[in-house]
Image 1 (cartoon, rainbow, N blue to C red):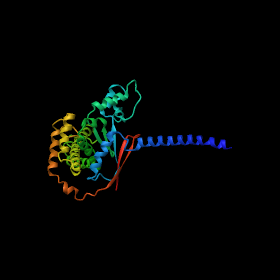
Image 2 (image 1 turned 60 degrees about the vertical axis):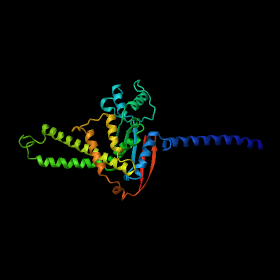
Image 3 (image 1 turned 135 degrees about the vertical axis):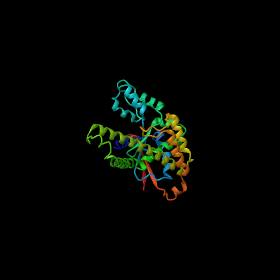
Image 4 (image 1 turned 120 degrees about the horizontal axis):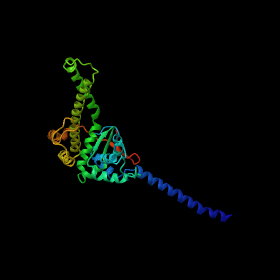
Length: 312
């Protein structure tokens, strides 16, 4: 009887070791997938920048998500290699660059990701409370992390200040004014064309597009100003974001003059607009009523997102 009891102990010990091993394995995998300590270095850079900006700027009360993708070079090469149809290649632009992929039609997708990282340049946009950057942006800025921060601040501005809805309201108001002004003029009356005529529709669409592009350029310059304001408030040199404009213009070969068909201003107009703003900006007035707040971070490797959550 004693012998049987003694034989149970090695079995229990072995079972305990297995359970403990699986527990550590599960915990390690959970931390890798969700902890900000084990997220890719690019996400750690974003966190460091936004922590400093949030310490002296109100970034709103909504969650803001950050995501890093493969970029437009990946999209173009995927189309050229026949991996997707012309209008269906956006998928490749947003591929998670931290995953490994199987070959597609004999093409090594992982090698394409590596090339997009090396050749893609700087890309960033904001949409639906998400700030998206290409992984190559971090390589392009290299040691100029403060300049990268200006780009992130610019995209944050679009989200925090609800640029899209403001732009949409302005567009609606401008179109209404234009319609009221022109309703009895040549466009309708002297041409004797019906409202549903294709020529009139095309002309109205053209006018709308011009107004949209104009408001978009205005929005981009406001976002430049807001990014500079965030940086100055956070204690950076006031010229940081102005210097970043020149840096990115040289890197990405921006046109000097503004094209009325473009959604973004040319380098000269953009630089002058930001220069004028910085000259007039008073940090002490802006920070007078600022109330510090708390926030937390969470990371989801499966979704490839880092989440900034204000705690107000």
